[in-house]
Length: 262
Ligand code: PEP
Image (tube, rainbow, N blue to C red; front, side, top):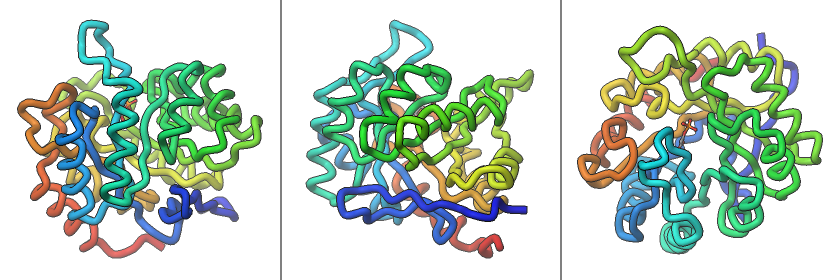
């Protein structure tokens, strides 16, 4: 049972990328922007596989303060250069309300990560930034809390919110998080907002990215967001979950083979 209205959120200066019920949007890119060359290569892999939106973290919220924290504004400049080279609009995370303006100047879509889903000051700031928002589910948040976080953004006048299920914390250690696939139809029954799935951050393991992407499409998600890296073994962030270009193309064709969800 779907909500009677389902919205489409358009991303990019020419509103070229729809995220909504008409299409299955394929978002891919490196977990973190490391260098201009690595980001361009990852973007070209993503584009060759059929991705229409480029992901890449310039501000990285890491569990450990000793882990790579991202290149910050330099990373945003690299992303903007790669958009210039490939034509792909960019989604990137903002972790601090003070950075919203600079991230919005460079990016086409602002990502709020799992660790900040209930950072209400940040939600209000992205609600005023004039760019679409990708709102990840907090790893310990209920669906109701996640939808209320989206309301914080909407209340500031920004209705262009896309929800992203990225796994929740459970007792099961085999995967980094447990992908709550049922969240997709549950959300779609009560909310008009598009909802996509991040199988890479859910599982933390690349061997599960294809089956979880197929599951996402099978339950009617509006797209997936997937990590890709030209050399996952040398990645500064989350290498074990990153696909290579060939694997990303296999994922795209595996997803395309599924019949559309009515
Ligand atoms: C990410 O997408 O780069 C990320 C850090 O994801 P999450 O907030 O879901 O952990």
